[in-house]
Length: 165
Image (cartoon, rainbow, N blue to C red; front, side, top):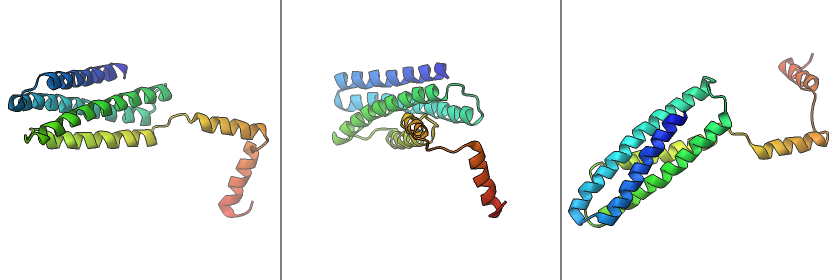
């Protein structure tokens, strides 16, 4: 898991470095062609990201992840970095468009960026992160006697099956 995350972060750094280099050097039409290379590199990184994402969810559902919290936190950092880098690319894309040029791969990039945003929102809402606030609230409730024994819970469940037992 860490290896693929490291490879992907390297790909993102490449895109980020290319964006910065492009901002410093571009000259109108020739700069647009160079920027298309940046977009292509970003799309290649996105394909790699999609593979990692599928793999992480598959590993989670298969019970193959020992450190669910750590894995989730690491992947969340990858997502946040991705959103920052894609935003840099989008900023340059808008700059090129404002100058009156079109960019090959523009639509694919916009689709990839939207997929990334959706993936980030989905990950944040579905990954089984430990909720530290909920743990503290549960501990406080338990300390105040607001809890039930297993027997009480089972009794309630058995009584709810048929109405009576």
